[in-house]
Length: 231
Image (tube, rainbow, N blue to C red; front, side, top):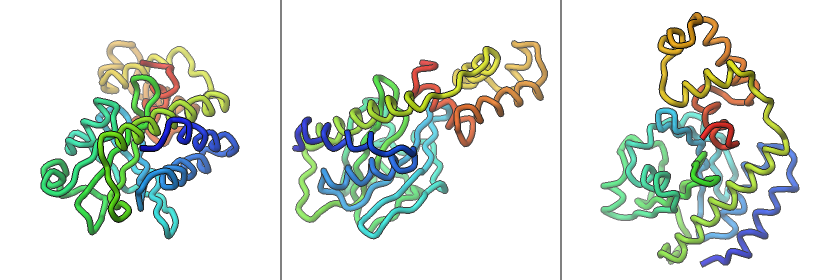
C-alpha cells in the first residue's frame, strides 16, 4: 500500500507544469512511479451517453495519443462499476473474460485489468486503465485503496489548477442549452421548448464547446460537470 502522504507529495508536482497536456502525461508518469504497473491508459469520461474517449497511453517506451478509443462504458461492467462506485477495481483470469467485451481497444498479452476513476467529489471525469503489471505485483484491497486515493487526489488537483486557468463564462443561453444536453434533450426537443431554431441551438452548442476548450458535446458536458458548473 502506498501512503496518503507519498501520493499527495507526488501529485503536487503537477502544479509545476503550466500546460494541460504536460499535466496529463505527468499524471500517468507519477502513477507508474508509485505503483507496480507497466502501462497506463488515460481516458476522458462524460456522463452524456456514458462515453469514454481515449486521451494518452504511456509505458516504458514512451507515450502516444489514443483518440481512436471511444466506447460506452456500460459495455464493460468493471469500468462501469469503478465509475459508479468511485473506487478502483481489478479483475484477472476468468473474471476478466466475464467483465470485458471482446471488442475493447486495449491490447495486451495479459488478461488482467485495473480501472482507477479520476473524480472530484461525486463526479467522475476520467479514469486510468492498466493491463500489464510488474512481476509478482499484488493487487489486494489495500493496494486498491491506494489506487482509489490517487484518482481522487489527482481529480482535486487538476480541478483546482484548471479553475485557476479559468473557463470562460458561458452566456445564459449557452448554459441553458448545455444543461439540457446534459439531461439528455435532443436538438429538436430544445428547439421546441426554447422556441428557437435548431440552427440557433447548434450555434450555442458550437460557441459553448469553443469557450470550454472541448472537442465535442460529450467533452464539453464533462468539463461542465468537472468544474462544478452543472451537477
